[in-house]
Image (cartoon, rainbow over all chains, first blue to last red; front, side):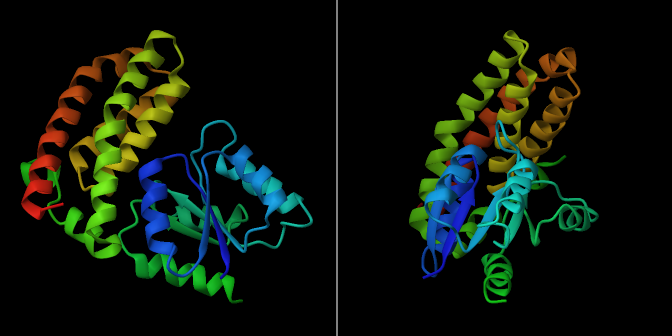
Length: 121
Length: 119
């Protein structure tokens, strides 16, 4: 199974995402960007779900470090964010994210669809 | 904001359809465990003038409340997160008691809804 890394400090959000994904993917959870980057060095994920508002290093900085790492640069990264403005999607895509999912997650079909499109390309 | 918009009764059934009754129960348990800690973190952040810590606690509270359909609490936490990021300690302090009341109201509504759904 493909490996998905979930980088999210909020435990109830992590629990929800894990429950949605774990039937189809191997899920690795990280509470901080620093822990995630260390973990990616040990096991490269096939896709990353990355919260933007993380304590310490925020999601945008984590993305920059992923893109700057030759072994990780091509990994698809989906921004997970509570921001809900209509213009946010374009902002996140222009920042280098491959996709954007707004929280709260209200449709597992939407989340799985976005993941599958990115992971199969 | 009336009672129907303060708490969206459809949120828990929607979550249950997505992840099942057991995980929904675990999500609720986590919320009940963490919401008071987040309010305490807001108070502690105000006390130590660490409004970034308060903002992070409010961000998580906003996110959890949104997931569970507690829009009234979600909106107040969002407003307070913005104040914390603007370094407005007075504005934040003035809303701590309303936040505690909102968390208590959310607690009651979610526990009632949980019993009704048999979660």
